[in-house]
Length: 150
Image (cartoon, rainbow, N blue to C red; front, side):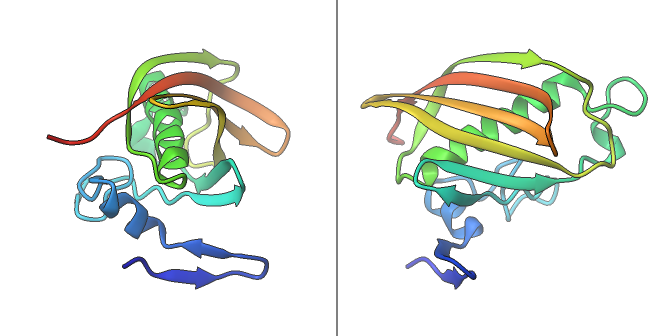
């Protein structure tokens, strides 16, 4: 059974329970059982969105001082996956289109957001963004397909 935490305005499911329940306990980005995990923790912000605050460490840089582009894509994909988890959906990424707007600075806290924009099971389309204040660093859209492990 999942644990809940009461916030000021709503009840949210503990993010580590969400990841474990959906087979992500050892995930490189959010897994609590992976010693190399980035420790991402997404929380719901409304009926169709999630958000996580994250401060990328220097080990994630490509060029000096900025997050590696592949890591930015992974952060966006993780946000969309967690958005689906918060809807009780387990799915695999079928296609991912990333747009890089500005370099993401290392050691700067950003928000990673995702929202569900189309639900036609077994197909789901999501959009994600990495932002700080009103600055958009990167965005992505992806198609996901419902998946049940063998």
